[in-house]
Length: 427
Ligand SMILES: [Zn+2]
Image (cartoon, rainbow, N blue to C red):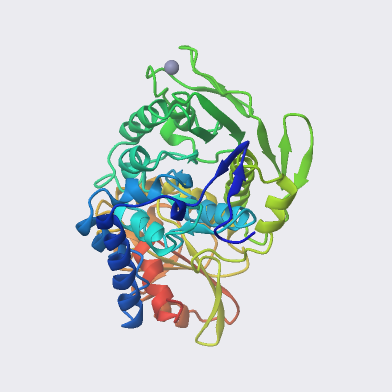
């Protein structure tokens, strides 16, 4: 299918936005945004994932609704897994036509606009959106699907309390009567938000981190869990999922089962895949086709990538908040030493209290190096967790400091991970 062909979504043929006549001001904003992004890339200042959007928004503050409307748009949000799930969905939807996507993780309004400006003729868009920006973006692009992955504490000083986010997303879901909301029903907070939708699609994608949904989002009473089910006395209960992740397979309610066989490791990536497959099915892609698109994906924005440092093989992973660490720590090879790098830049959140929510006790008996700008805070936490460790603030020097040869695992939070990618020549 050519990029400009109409694509069939459900029973609806969607014309590419190029078929619509945009106002002169918007056309100018798109052209200037594309030029600005190209100059930024040409001068090695970045990939243009933000600047193109800023220019376009400056020239036409309504550019998002004008170039977002008329496409089939999927918004992906949640605390963890946005970048991975958006990448998975874009790979799947490429089987229908050209897809605009903010694959570099620029997930605020300017990043979203930049992605749409970059592929301004694409009939489809998969957009990762920061939870706090979903109300503004959704109101302008009227998405065909809104994907709600999970909600948990993250950057408390910037994002705020997770229940505030849940209420905002619930209002968004209720305000979009034509939008399908694809939601993980194993997360009570996500379920509460998605129940506002007229068209929810429930996915039993699992949840390892329960600490932010101990009390009900609706009434404050205790959420009672039994096996995979949960309920509250007020009536909020786990909906019956249409799709369920069981081990390495996705099952439908009717009993058909597809093995995922992903190259990406871990339960969380399988959960992201299950949700991506369910979303794509809503847009007309058969599950078998969707899964085949996911299997070759080996890394997401440098995550899980192998590199060589001081003659040793290292694998670099990203973990940004307690729920993310809960999924990442079990992935670590038990035979390898671990370098943990923690920063507290603005993009990480200045508040470091989350260190005490991570169960670093799992690393007892392992060889561990505390690194990053906040290596000392981390070292205190590791001491209380009774994890023997050394301290070396620079992550690559920390790898070199390890006495024994062999592979090393590095787990870093957001800016520590970003800096490592640059140092490894990845970015
Ligand atoms: Zn309740």
